[in-house]
Every structure is written in C-alpha cells, then in structure tokens.
Image (tube, rainbow, N blue to C red; front, side, top):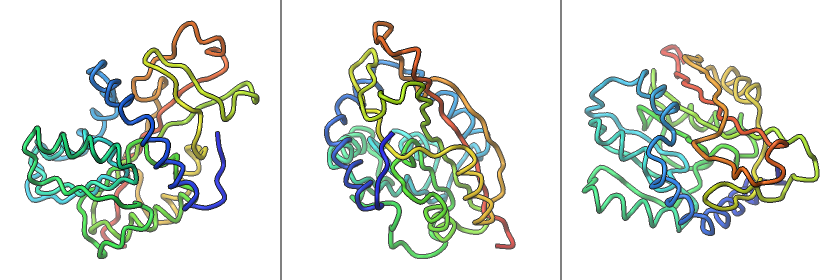
Length: 240
C-alpha cells in the first residue's frame, strides 16, 4: 500500500484514482446487490428506524449510495462530500433519479470541512479512511462536528499482502483491475484514535472480502492477498 507524505498528497491521489475508476465502481454496485450488506446491517442496528430530523455527513460519499439509504429512512439532510468529480457526478445523478431533496453535494476534503461545531447527528465514513494520513487528527475533526451523543460509523478496507513485490501494483477483480493503494491503518490505529478523542466503541467487527469485491480466480497472486473490512460504531459521549 502506498504511503503519503501529507494529507494534501493523499487527497490528490484519491481524487485522481476515483476520477479514473468511478465508472468501474458504479458497474460493481449494479452487478452485485449484496455489496456492503454486512456493513449496512450493522449500521442500521444502531440507528432508529425513523431518522426524522437527523442531519448527517457522508465523508467521502462516492456515488452517494449510503446517503440515499439513510435519507429514505427519514434523515432530514445528508451533506455529501468527496474530492472526486467523477464520483460526485454519479451522486448528482442519484440525487436527481431518486428525487433526494435532502442530499447536499459538495466537492470538499472531509479532513478539513470548515463546518461549524456540533453540526451533525451522524457521520459515516465508508471506505474513505484509507486515504487519510493522520487518523487521530481526522477523528478529532469528526468529534468537533458531531453533536453530543452523535454516532460515527466507519467501514475501512484493509489488505494483508504476503508478497511485498505486489505493493503498488493492481489487484484483478472479476469486473476489472484496481490499484493496491492507500494508507494502511490497522484496527488498533482506529481504536487508539477513538480512545484519544474520547469516543465510546459501541460495536466493532471484521469481515473478509472487502465490500463485496471478488478476486478473479485466474489472478495468479490471489493467494498472496487477503481482503478485510473493519467496521466500527463510535459514539461521542454526553460529558464530552
């Protein structure tokens, strides 16, 4: 996995990558209706059935699929931020197609949003944190943005690469190739960042085969790469 010298460099990399693979991601979503089912099931377990009046931040929103689901559960507003023009284009198409008036789409780096303190009831960061250099700093920003008692839901990819020469190359999935890039953060990195910023850990789980992607059986290095998704539900305490 690639290491970055600064958050600016990491964000620029993420922007270029997803401007390139945006259409590929949408193709993946449409081909597999079960993608993210474990992650979403876990998230919905901790949310009220009716999210009426709730304001949420989708940090690294991609095509806006998760915001759409939460808006349909009654959320008042979903602020969707991403650095990729290609992914934001898909998000705008989704907003129009589903008539999602509560979806507020902005091109913005979620590591420094500039939004006022205690703006959001819920923040989701799903598959966007591998492109964050300093997890502790970003968790501090999320804590600032959350209202007292607010929830932070995180799902993050993690690859175990047993062959060092594969780092920085491309992994081949059934639907195409995807670079093995991004900053590597372990579950302990996330837990330490949560503790430092006084979040309580409400739930944590690990699933193999990150977000529904299936490695091409003909990919000759398939036995050297293991995919995982870490998911956390964190809460900003009442006495913070």
